[in-house]
Length: 373
Image (cartoon, rainbow, N blue to C red; front, side, top):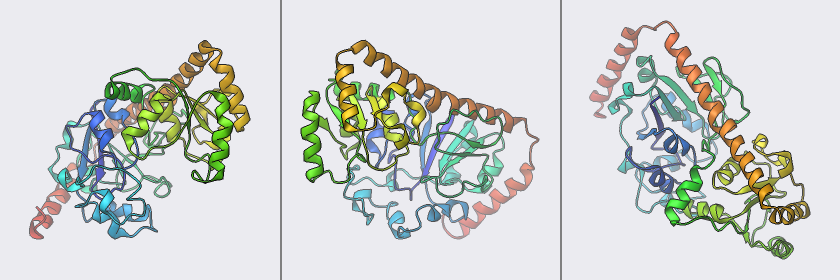
């Protein structure tokens, strides 16, 4: 299957790069998150940034984060994220002087017919194009998974839910597919190539939401308690690559307390070769955690680490089990679902191509008249 992954030039996350970049280059270009980098490491997908079109579906992103100023998103068309007015713009180390303008193209200028599956963030492809290409499985994922989840919208075939329940879809509709679609060793391989060495396998990477105040007495007390584990504490780094290297060199990824998380960081840790220890009630993707990796407090985490440090075979067995679960829940189940959906789509009676082709012609004509071509 040939897959394309698409975002708009108004999307405030993921890669700022061209179609021919390597997976490593895509990852390093991300504004904030790792995202579905497995599409490129495992499936050789193509990446596109498309320009925002003035259609209802292509402006649906305005409803995803309604409390943010729409002007901020449109600044991304010509400015690097770090130079926009987003509140978090100074927190993330995105590429300087690189904006979406360097890579964005019109969706009308892409030959979509070469793809079996197109996955878009927030409906980046105009409906008239979607309806014209009846042989393609058109999928969308809402960036914040907070709207457009009641039914399938705007002529697309599949809504990707960001969940990892292991459910296998047999028909068009909703498909479990995580935002961090990553293989069980994808990030480990990227980090090892970048650093040119094996992991140091030393230290405890503390999940960023474990404590509310990383600069206060809370953190100082935590550091003192963790000294007895013989592993230095490590924390989230804002640069994508720097953070990946911290994960890669850590032996354990621990979350104790703090807010409930979806679990993209858990997938990233396991893919980096780092064993995750945490309370399963604190994470949406809890099925990735064997029961032996459940801990409910700092004391339990310290005890577990001390035991595993003395039994490396058990450590390796648990890491292998976590990797196997990532393969099953994060990669295999979503891909089987998409293959099923693609087969169903191509077995359906063809809709009227003549009507949709006419609609596409009218759209091109309208853009020519307004000077957008």
